[in-house]
Image 1 (spheres, rainbow, N blue to C red):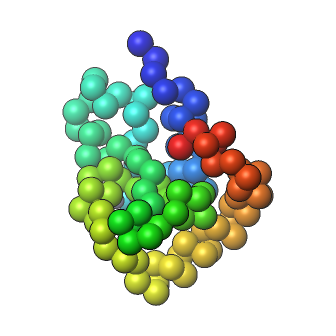
Image 2 (image 1 turned 180 degrees about the vertical axis):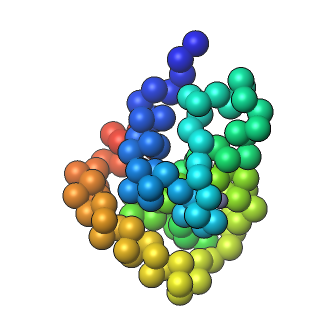
Length: 113
Ligand SMILES: [Zn+2]
């Protein structure tokens, strides 16, 4: 059964701005429809959306604050404040995706993430 098509599509759309590489480690990411259930080896490489500044530290659910990273890594850093180098990388990423940011700024829920 196909699940979460729209959300998955937007995850890929975001991931593409990062060359489909994890924001943190730079490793290749797999997307859910590539087979999380059918291919167990890919599981640790699955992409997920991460709040750059964690929600627990006041990060907002705005696209400007979202990056795509390996799910496992994501879990590891649930409440770590990003350092200056990471912030610079986020700014560069947001410059690359400025058009998309402008498009969905009004309503992130509409973007489906
Ligand atoms: Zn990673």
